[in-house]
Length: 182
Image (cartoon, rainbow, N blue to C red; front, side):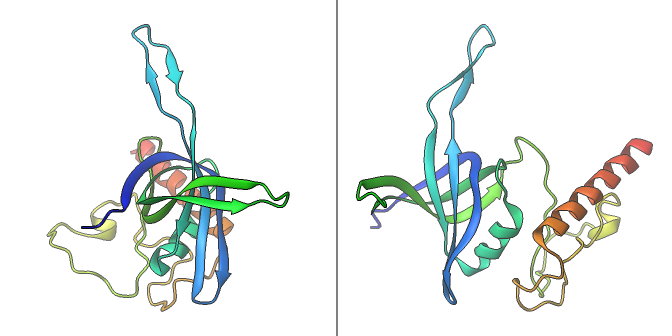
């Protein structure tokens, strides 16, 4: 029996991901805020107090993807092990927070759309018999700029995160214009 507490939290990235540590012992941390809300019978939106979590990502296959994909203000869903984290600040005060050791991190599609790009050199077999790439959806290009299908290390990208983001938005805008024109 495993006595760990596993949670799934939907919220917003409050502090962008940053890489910490060195060499093989690197990890990524970011701050996540989650504010429950509901509508009253009169249609007014009410909010409860915000819960804050420090999210720690230590899986090597997830670290670079989180760094490339998330920024402040993004709506996300995080699933992982919940635990208390304590430390002493610069003034000598004991501090505490809740930390999620993330196993899964993704954008919440409740608030927007996303373009997924697999970052692997090996194409995984699919059970689907539907056409892939351009034939399946002509509005979405088969490749995202800056990703090399033959790359062996996920950390070796041709473009910066800002350049990738700008090109992804340009691609999405062009696809939306093409759909509107059709």
